[in-house]
Image 1 (spheres, rainbow, N blue to C red):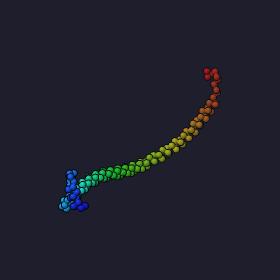
Image 2 (image 1 turned 90 degrees about the vertical axis):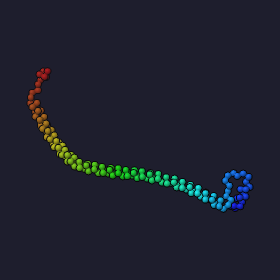
Image 3 (image 1 turned 180 degrees about the vertical axis):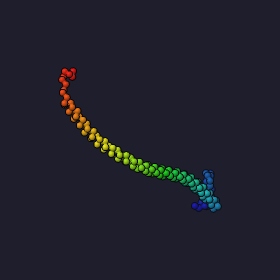
Image 4 (image 1 turned 180 degrees about the horizontal axis):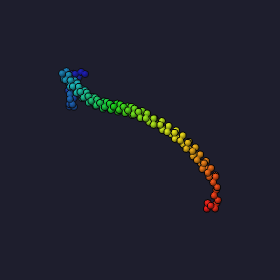
Length: 144
């Protein structure tokens, strides 16, 4: 931009409508410096906002780290409890299996005893039948 033409435009304007453009090199340099200072302030404000965002993300990251740690701790406890339960169950099944084996033997013995009892009852029934068959049958009139 031609500085000479800028001053002529400023002089030809009947009423000033706002800040006048700089007409000399020092005025122009000062204007540019003010604008760069304004841009620098805006960048500083943006940097502060990004720092705030970074702090918020750091807080979120810490919260997720805490959740991760809690999940890991819960998993470790669950595995510990499951292993302990497995050991207790395996230790408890040994005596239970021995008890079941003993019960099976008792049931086999009871079955054998039942066979003996059944055969004895059959023999007793036959003897009772023989006794009944030897006795004379009462007449109908005697029963009434």
